[in-house]
Length: 116
Image (cartoon, rainbow, N blue to C red; front, side, top):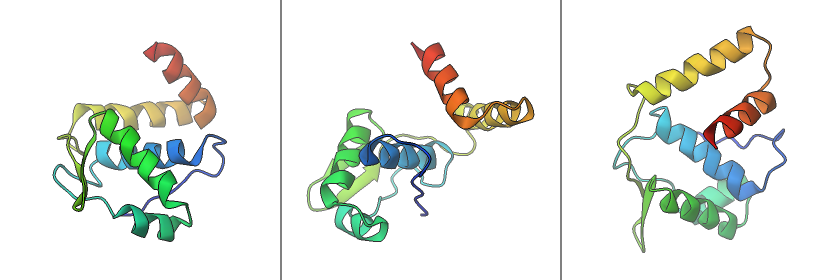
């Protein structure tokens, strides 16, 4: 699994990491029941503090996206994937935004406003 932290996003690292992991779950790169990398391993790979990774994992656990099992790691708890309507709608939305010249920060702002 490839994890990418968006350098253009000025948010906290744990939120950026949680967002990247959430996207991997929603679009099917990581499937239901699949184990995420150990926090220490992921921290070393991304050159982050292990507590940053753990905070991102706890955030996803609180959202119901993953389950945390002490000593066994983090496991995807939601049945999502590339075949879901949500993943398709997200890709369609991003494509439409690009066609209309809406950049990522503006699209994210529009989504946040609509989500309220």
